[in-house]
Length: 391
Image (cartoon, rainbow, N blue to C red):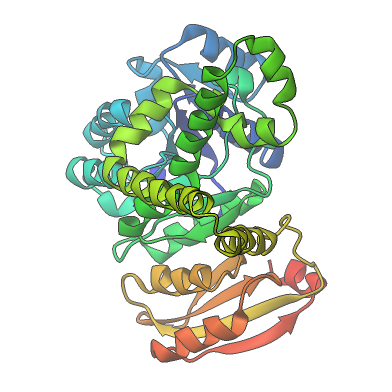
């Protein structure tokens, strides 16, 4: 079956998916696909034989292959329409070279927590770099490998997509629809902003958690006695410190500049608490604690959008490169969650972009940003029943 034929299987679904790297994220992705799209064929590609056997035993993959096996190439050349690179970034270059040598024309995405290096590799290696849609699921576990994988890992989690001006609008729409079908919520970030953003909300927190554990460990004359006291908040705040040291060392050096800047800023914040204590400034210390408490309370407790308060946004637009990435970036920056996205081509050069938003975010701010950018926008309430009919 030709790759083009495979791409036509439904508006957003993928019929044949190769998951390269069947660790925690790759295996969880395949498990989620198995639950949400049981008809999809999934090839588990991994260097570890036990992992491949386990993937088949759990029925998370319909076939398995070592990266060097002919079965991988055959699967890609016989109708594969999505390749998910879930291997460490150090191993990705070789996989990209394989796909390039096989002239793969389907969509390629990844799950790496840094984007600068992998986007550069894809741009230099793939013959069709516009088909690379960078992705980053913001989910994880203190357990590593397939043994820590589970099908609900992405439910309610943010999944970053990073389209750019060269990304075909239909590619983004298909990836958005597929990712949300696994229970995740898509956030759009420009590629050049991704690494700095995740350094603040993911990478720095990991090293802060590791520092807290080191602090407790250094002061434990009898480790078991101290660690029995380290329950509740301490365990919650340091859970991520149990993650793979090798993985996090790789992430740290891939995102060295942004992580270093974040740790330097964190050092300054901790110093402000220390200075307030040293000077006996109760009002300053109270203000610092209040600022943090208010910001923390402002975070949403969970993603529970109302199914009765959906809004449809219709945007007539010139069908030009990058327009979908531009609009969806505005939506993410206003805190709006896109539940579904459709592109209705009116003529060869024009289309109507339809976004269905949940009841999160600032729709007014989104409207202002779109209008300021020159878009004509219409908003209308949409019931869950109407959305089910449209979708």
